[in-house]
Image (cartoon, rainbow, N blue to C red; front, top):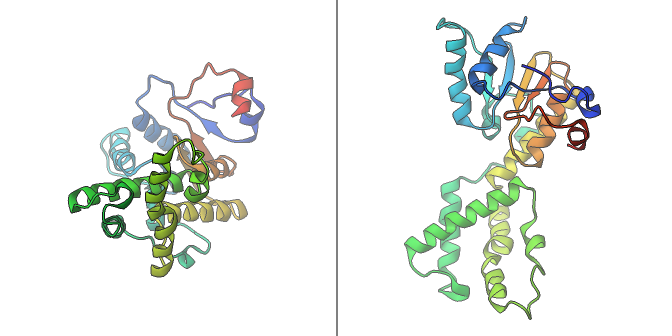
Length: 256
């Protein structure tokens, strides 16, 4: 494992690393972790998704020659609530609405329009559209975008009458949906995950953990990026970049 951009100013302030492009990523990650002098079980590895987290366990077994060993904690940001981390104030957060409950409520809101603003009137179509609206909510929360503010005035009314109809329909998620969340005392799943990530970021910034924390960075939202930057600055932290371009010049790296 090598440190990328060692000549860049930014790279000297934070700890980043990458594997050679030809290396199989998870096996290389497991081997690098086991090469450290620390107890292999003492630490935390944060991977982009649950699938990678599950696969890394098998990579550790292979890297250890098939011999059983105690693994570090391996989590994905989506499972950070169950990770048993030191999250300051995490228990004070409202619970997340379940995806199936959200889809059911959104379906009901769509059907209540009775076809107005182009809304479907049959249950299968309304159910499918509710899933799309849920995905839109997740994408907006991931990017920390206020949908109501972003959609307001995006196209002048005189230029796109059909877009105004679309905006009226989208009031389901810009107006009605926030009211539903408030009434039930819940929040969107991605919004809650973002708050947990920020809580962990603040906790580690205030009191760095004594164990290793490695985070595999992939394209993600601002909350995950803030966590990655904090991990890169921890005494035993490391951010690992898959697919890093070793030929990236220092000015480009510093700009990142």
